[in-house]
Length: 69
Image (cartoon, rainbow, N blue to C red; front, side, top):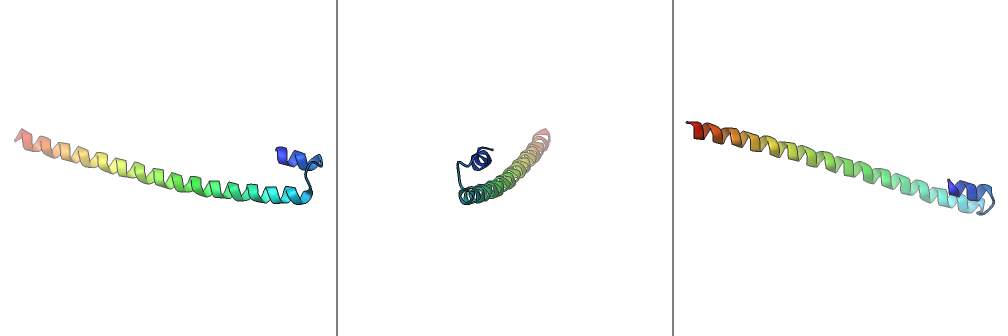
């Protein structure tokens, strides 16, 4: 991690390091929440797709029954 190395080498102050790490941690948390929300949306879309496929299959079976009579 370059940030830690910069601190260890004295390239940045302790205060700056703490500030940058806090921003980094906040960004990581924000990204984790976004990733979780995207995963939930993806799960919803997949479920809706499965529901649509099942509906289409049911309609095809119904049409086949009507046609075969």
